[in-house]
Structure formats: C-alpha cells, structure tokens
Image (cartoon, helix red, strand yellow):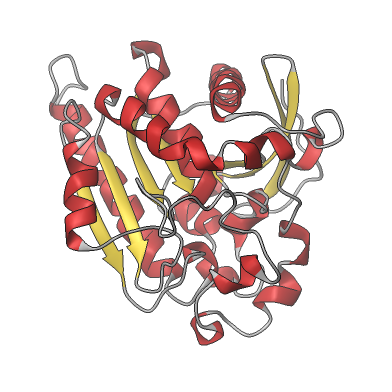
Length: 300
C-alpha cells in the first residue's frame, strides 16, 4: 500500500508510504511531469547514517537525483531502508543486508503493482545502500524486471582492513566526505534532516562485507556500474582493486567502472552530483537499449 502526503505540483518530490514484508517504509517519489507514464522506475537506496532525503540535495535543488530523473522521464523512488525514517521506531536495531533486501524487494513490488514502472526497475545504491542493491541483483528473478544496478561509494574491500566501523571515531563521518569545497554552501545545514543514527545490526555487519561481496557478485546477471569519487576514502579503488572487483561479476553481461572527478564520498550532495546522476541515468538508458534488443524484448 502507499499513501501520498500532501499534493505538491507536478515534477516535485512528495512523501509516500510503502509496505514490504510487514514493514512500513517511508519514501520519496518523483514522477514525470504532465502525468506521463514513466519509462522505468529508479529505486534509490541511501547509505548508512543517512535517509532517503540524501537523493534530494536540499542545499542546491538542481543537483537532486529525484528531480532530474523525473524530468528525464523516469519515476524515482528513494526509499528509507529498514531502521530509518518511518520504520526506525519499529526497528530500533535495524536489519542486516539480507533482511533489508527482502523488505525492499517486497515494498517495490507492491508499489509496481499499483503504479506503472515502465520497462522495469533500475537500482541505484549509495555506500551501505549498495549492499542490499547488489544482494537484490544476486537474488533477482524474472518477475523483478531488474534492468541494472548502479553503485557508488561502495566497493569490494575497505581502505582500512579490520575497520569494524568506517564511520567510527570523533568526526568519523565528516572525515570521509572529502574536502568541504566539493559541496555547495549550506549542504550541512540543509541536510540536517537527512542524517540519522546507524542501527546496531547494520553496523555489526560492516566487517563482513568483503566475504558477502565475494558470495553475491558471481550471482549477479544484470549490467552493473560502479562509481568511485576522486576523494573516496572508505574503499580501495586503485586500478588493480577495480580490476579484481570487476572480475567477480562473472555472470553479469556488462560491468562498468567509473571515476567521478571533483567529488567526495557523498556524490549526490556535491557539486559533481548532476554529472554523476547524468552518467548513472545514461547507464540506465543503455540498459533500456539492451533490454529492448534482448530476445522477447519490446517490438522495435
């Protein structure tokens, strides 16, 4: 089920409620203007310690993924992961990656049963949000209508081995943003409502990600794209690291590796956000072409 809150004008972002596997989730939704049917559904999954509002760039709306995606003909659904937003009170300890994936898949499936989703679902995961996105891709079935996955701020191995919490320590979160000049003035004030505590069960899984990645990546059968910011500090992303990462996706028809200049870990909030979003949505365009040309795809 879902319920719109308020009645914003066309092309704007509105709050919605979703339900997945018995969990109520808050989300933000933007749709193409003029009531046009979406060409595809972009599901944006935020990182640890953030909320879905990460994708709406309050300090500089021109950088918003939600608004850009709608103007390019897509519906964009940014979902608060289990343990954040509406579900934080019911799930104070949060959920692990596998459970989050189950809830997110069910919530998006429920949304798609009631709303047009175009050619299918495109996952865009940032930081910790890249983990359930990749888990979803590894578990995807034909009924998921999954077109591809775009991941930023998440890799195969942490930059610091044995770091149980890459966000730990005094000012740990800020240390990984990169130089402040990469972000519009007012980003931190405008983004106060997008910051949230990291649930305990989520934090407890941080050290296990390299093993989980090695298990999930070989099962992904859709196109995948990874973006690493120039000033990314959480993940190893030298050329050799990225070559090893790509080699893990043995069943994926296409693996793209990209670097975003003049950007820090939180790509969707910085000055480079629009460039990154255009590249990500350009990748979606390529996935749509591949989907149309596939056997049994739309008539050409």
